[in-house]
Length: 307
Image (cartoon, rainbow, N blue to C red; front, side):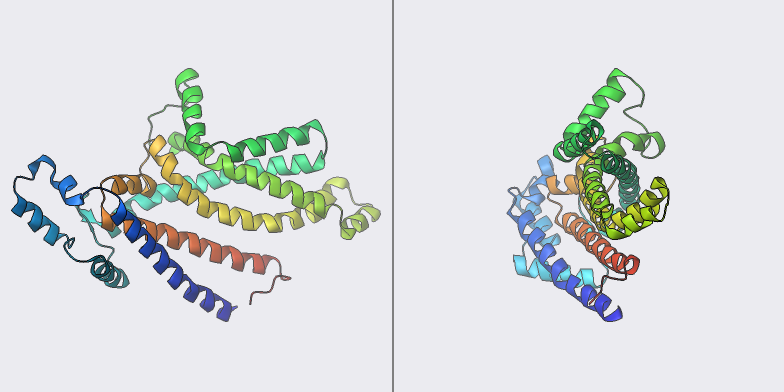
């Protein structure tokens, strides 16, 4: 287990390096000069532009800029955001709790809806309820989150006035964003639970349990659902990583604070340090979550060998 963990952690290094280099190149290929955007109409002289370009280190070649940024990252310094006038580390620390809260709430929504619909669909396989559950799951996967978010705002915020559109980032303000973000993941979990449970209920140990006279509900929950949820754990873990990435769109739609909205603002302003810092943090979290899921799956199911 320890050697597996060490190898996986070492494997993260080239992955994160590749992500950071790719983002660095892409953000520099976007048209527009960040110095001109920063100065705006206040750029009164060429000397002022040259001075600010030198101050930000943008007069250096791309390899030099990347190498300098990488050395600073290794020292725990993600740089300074010239648009927010604040250290990137402090900005991320300030906004990350909002994104994590939204992602966890969306994951809870996805699990509750996905597992419930998946179990009902498996138990009622081939019935109208099964068809309806699958249609809901496919609809959740197919609908873009930005479209669903606008639809929920229009229905529950504008037409019915059940939930205020502008509210605090926590509490009531989490309901619509959590549903928007979690609905797609709920569709994937529904399909996974349904197929896994149907397969599990056809195994020999299920027939043995029935032959012993156990009640149907007990066989379903204790033997069938317990084994069917094992592969679902992988999907749930991976979906949490996807929810972190998906929060970018949802935070913008609902005007919520968070690293997703901050990332959009940084890209539009060509704030190189902030974009690179945010992408590096999001990629690191995604990779760590995948690692935790792999280890957790091996612990829950001893038949899985971690090598």
